[in-house]
Image 1 (tube, rainbow, N blue to C red):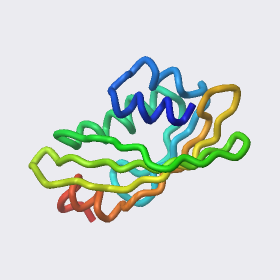
Image 2 (image 1 turned 90 degrees about the vertical axis):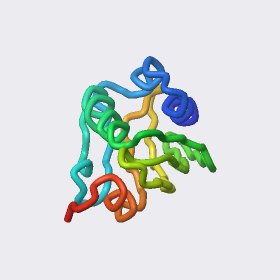
Image 3 (image 1 turned 135 degrees about the horizontal axis):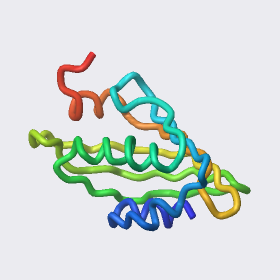
Image 4 (image 1 turned 45 degrees about the vertical axis):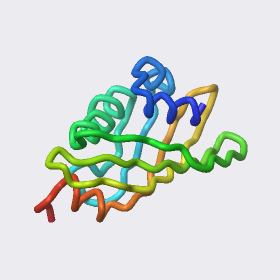
Length: 126
């Protein structure tokens, strides 16, 4: 399920992305950036967090790395590369700790270099 979701995010497959999340799913993004926080439900995860992050980048490419699963918990790493709207190069390593239940993602806690994200995506913030 998690690999399917990340590949759909990489490929821009919005139907699979939406189908990946349980109705009460949450996504937690760390730090104190304007994008940081906990997003509740697929509409907020997709419409606010994922779309918000995507709108900050002129282009982005996702590359899946290691995936480790034990029971319903999956740790997945991915590299996000691209550039901001002003052309600043963006390269970040991410790890998501996913909880999957009944074939749907119910929680995600993402770990990433928020300092790099802030410098590239929110210049002048903080």
